[in-house]
Image (cartoon, rainbow, N blue to C red; front, side, top):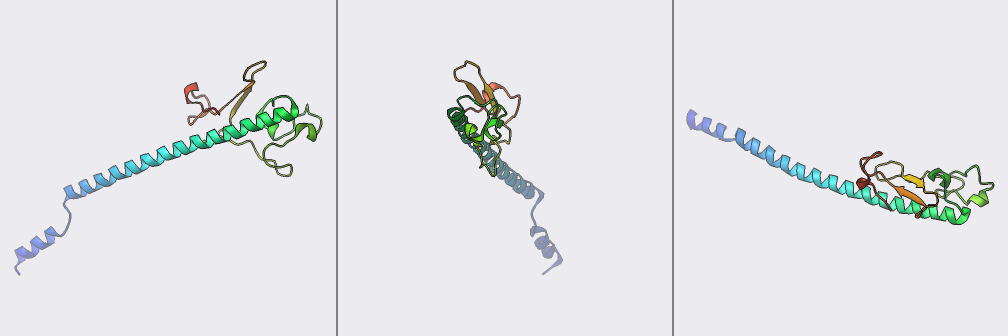
Length: 146
């Protein structure tokens, strides 16, 4: 075997620069598709958690109303007895956790507190919603409601 044929074998053993660029480009495109799908899944999961937690909080607000005969002034009233209620029995709580280990009011899928506003003489008597994925101050069309 001569020197020229040995050089050809050595030169033909690797990838060309173009082949490497094409391979990296294809891997990049596949990675973008996978990441986009993952973010879409995470966004949907956060919205589902938010809707579920909103329903739970709304149910507990209604339960509080059935026991106390008024709506809570804030969602904190569901885990700590308000000062204007005389006894634990009149309060009926805590509505999350247990008497030995009260829990906090659930948050939305982005770990933000829910917005709760009483509407005096209103129908419905209160508003309950999440700001959505962009957090406090987001426009109303991004809010998540029960």
